[in-house]
Image (cartoon, rainbow, N blue to C red; front, side):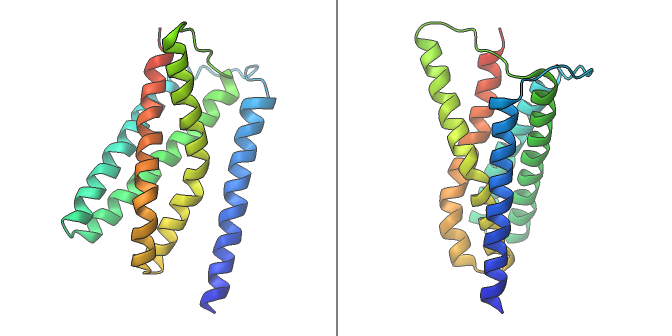
Length: 173
């Protein structure tokens, strides 16, 4: 039966991750924002705060596990995931209502911005299945697999969270 549960998880993970990427692709590349009677102009600031919260919780979770406080680590990681999930909901709502925000910078800073943005987007696509798998291994008490994957998941998740805040500030005039 354990193999069956694993297979169910891999299918679930693939479906959820593919659906999320597909939906975000539709939202950002095909659908043009606007036309919704809602002023969500406050959401980018809220989303930046959620990204900063997620990054902080991730770092605290790392400190907790390194000091042997497994239950504290678990709660911090779940809280970081919750903050990232609320961020994603806010991001979708904002972009559904308002569409994209165009970057206004010119020159070398424009190259820096798009380098950060592209790496942020590409790594955020990989993040969801990695996080779900890392959580899955922990929930199955497969801690050696959890630890091995977490060593890759954590820096990517941190990078995506921190660069989300950086992108927010770079988009502000």
